[in-house]
Length: 281
Length: 314
Image 1 (tube, each protein chain N blue to C red):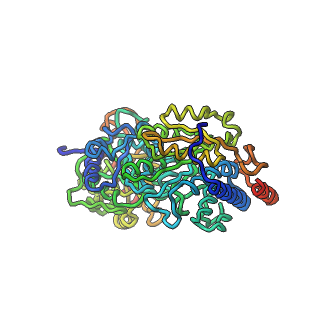
Image 2: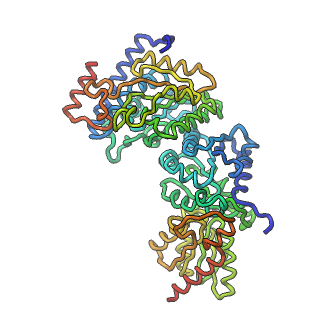
Image 3: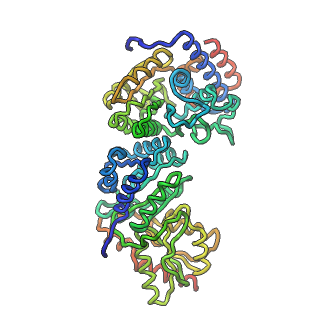
């Protein structure tokens, strides 16, 4: 890890911590209420989304379709709860609606649907497809000479999809330096550790070999997340991949590093315990 | 025949013209721009042409992202790869969010020719037609191709345009106007209606002429708009002529023949014969040899028309 250059103020850090806490609490609540969903990989990405939406991205819920806005593509679409919780926290739609996740007639589909919820920049869910769409958005920004930035969040298991590497080549070839992607490197996928299921390791070296600028950070450290995003902005002619080391289930000690919490909902009793753990963290 | 042009060649020219007029149009290809003819656009508008390489899944995904950001992407490769290799990207990244991506796929059907079965897409209409939010168009000649490309650029939503490798005779004059969901009447008749699309429109017309000498009066419809399909024209044809023949350079499963059959059985059931590829793969050969071997000919249409008329009278 390089020397920290750009630091958030104590006030900013405190706001991010409180936003991330609220996001985590809502992830647990909504998945419990839905009795299905993906809490583990949502919790591991909560700090990254908190920094993006509350310290970085130029987005405004009152102008959700502004052509000059920054874009975010949740390529690991199963982490929809973290995106919904973040967008509600940001004011895109009422927080009460979060409890309708995965219900019939709800806008909150099991995986993100861009036509139903304002603030969702791309429909995702089938793994491997989001990074290509993010490339298209970044390319449009270049063609139209707009200075927005495009962010994408990938899962580490998702790197097993071939399309990711097609997109990796494309982004580097077309010098999409307005594109910054994250790998939520929590090390676990449904069937177990990524290294055992079908190893995508080593991750940073692969992206370097594909022509990307690569940064490795602690994906739960706000200063490191923020600094990496700022560093990416200064890199010209290359897209940046931020390999964020994370903990699946982060913030709920009972869930941390357990692959089984990839796609399982807590019981109501567990929910109360987990919410207390988040509050106490 | 003189002045013959393949629909892919008409596409390249139409796309270049469209690009001159509409700065929002961008074009993507997958290392086949010389074959799909997007190289005509690329030469005129190099800043709006992007080669995605031999990577069709990403090709479609990048198209989706460009559309999400307000551009009008025309995405081209062979029909096999656009709809087969990248099927799920077309479904989940384009059709589900109803993004404004135009998939103009060339080298459809058996007339790819010598490349053989691996490159002969005979299922593309079936699988594109099954996708919600997708519009499916199969132009018959250069004039119609130009109309369809201009239409697609104006239309908001995904469009699949099926284009061919081999040259086709002109069917339409310059005054022709393509209308989505509308069949074009090429000849009227009373005993049977021949409904055709793409390269099968020309042999369908010739078949109708041949049938006259055999005492059968055939109506001929060009059905470029496969989805939405012209339900009214099909029902009217069933009522007026009582028998239908469909002709397509595609499997008889899932394409034009199936689309027409669906309308018929739900409205006005009448005898139907489907001229198309009979649930088999193609092989290497010249386009002419292949069309003959797989019964995609004027004579095959005549035979089907006679058969369906006899079934009607039985």
